[in-house]
Length: 469
Image (cartoon, rainbow, N blue to C red; front, side):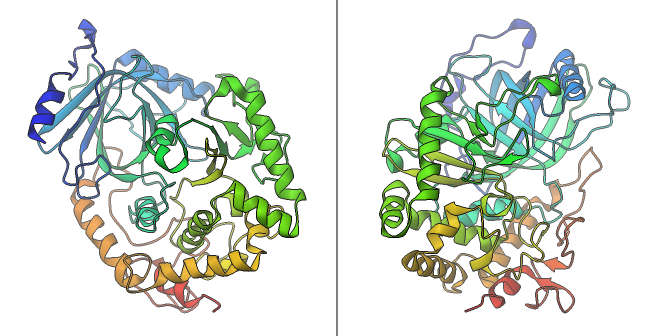
């Protein structure tokens, strides 16, 4: 490991922007406790350093269109256990749907070095945007998310970790980091506190799992909301394309099914997606059962959805037909990729009470054929129930309170001293859901199993106690 790190140091990039250093691409290796980037045993430091003009561009572009996809230039530094990797001229943009924010000040303002008004926000990093072939530990992109509306600082971390423990290899990976923002000319960087570091679902994500779904890259779609109030319900086939987000919001076009790979082959990708949706909705009986078994890894999909409903994920396909990826792989099968798990573990909104909702009737029972038609097949119905039973088994290190609570306590204990920050936001780890949750009394580390009907409810024990079998 020491030798690998010394070799990687030969390729580190200078932080001197004025000299525009020469970059030699390399898959860097840096020692971590577990030998991998997304290790929950580590809390590395990331510093993003911006030329003043680039930081101000980030602010003014947000004012023109908060959803803009324009990237600015930043320098990237990753530090862990006394070792450092630096990359020059990465691309950076703000990210998030309803959670997207301005990182400093108010509309119209530029950087204020004397009295900056820092704000937490999500960032998306693109390491090869300005330097072809540049990678960070084999990855082209990385997401950094603040713990918006999650005083526990664990929800997204817990869910992605649970997917991994449960064998859902289609899930992204995630861990903690500490984030600093440096604007050129400032005496000191701004400390943004503890962030979630999340694997991006992109071409590298596909390649890293190629042993599961074949080497030839397929078509990756992101499901969400499209222009005209369309959503990714796998019923409509109208809103399908490559999103075009401009600085002028009135010129921007959004699609419910947004193609993310092989974008120059949109016509072929649309034919495949349209045929899948058509067959999904028109085939019935034994014909449908045979077809879906050929087109999807149904046991994996049901394992994914068992995990979804147990963690209380209402903001995805079976909820509002939003926040998921769907991949048509080279092996001829399609795969559901879970995504965006910050509003879980007792934070309810569209569902009246995510801690007690029947997992067999989790979301809408119409216009969600991808899940409802599969569960209508007795074999898959019982497979789904079995996947839930496996999750709640106290002998398995999965969802049961005696397993979940120690993990959460350990993570919180590891990051607790790092959460103070220069934004003045989210300064304390607190055991409660988001302030806007329709069930504000859920706890993760205490409470009863009454699902908030009798005072403070523990989410894990309430979820298990509410199972109707």
